[in-house]
Length: 174
Ligand SMILES: CC(C)(COP(=O)(O)OP(=O)(O)OC[C@H]1O[C@@H](n2cnc3c(N)ncnc32)[C@H](O)[C@@H]1OP(=O)(O)O)[C@@H](O)C(=O)NCCC(=O)NCCS
Image (cartoon, rainbow, N blue to C red; front, side, top):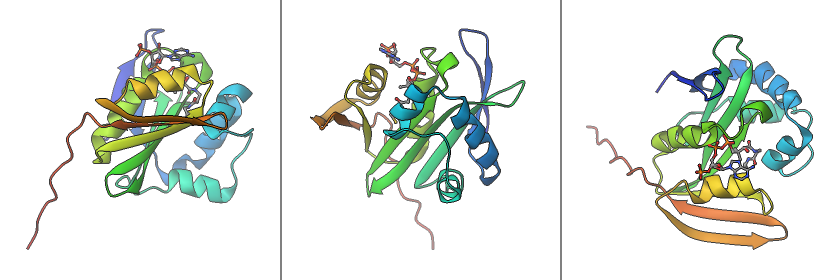
């Protein structure tokens, strides 16, 4: 997938595409547009800006072990959502997602996680969220084919699910 267009129930047309190194200003502006609550839920701490190192980490990705997709407004280009999957083991990756406040609860979070999962090529996904984050818990638990574990500790909940996307066979060369 390079580009995908979809229309949300509120009629916003969204372009979903891989994140690129040039997206650093877009991500910074996107963070500033989030409510403090949404930013806290994504980063598990108060967050108003990214350091240069954080911006490099978030945008200079290989799209193999670290997959990151951006959803932008197709007309005006501003950031609507970001979803990412970072491989943390041979067959497991950590998911993270944020959907801007005006566009939440329209199915975009689920759609973006599905797109990330199709590209990640792992059999399990983990997700970490505030234990009180009902939307993220519902999204994560409903995302895979089976919930492997669901642990709450210190107000943080870690959920591991089995991917519903089969892993691809390695391509043998030579
Ligand atoms: C969590 C988040 C990504 C969900 O994105 P979204 O686009 O609103 O989610 P969707 O519309 O695809 O909804 C997915 C499911 O969660 C449910 N849901 C979403 N927000 C909810 C909320 N606040 N309370 C209860 N359920 C909620 C939806 O009803 C839907 O359930 P269904 O599968 O039964 O239909 C979004 O609320 C967000 O960005 N939150 C802040 C960042 C965050 O929490 N990230 C997760 C940790 S990295």
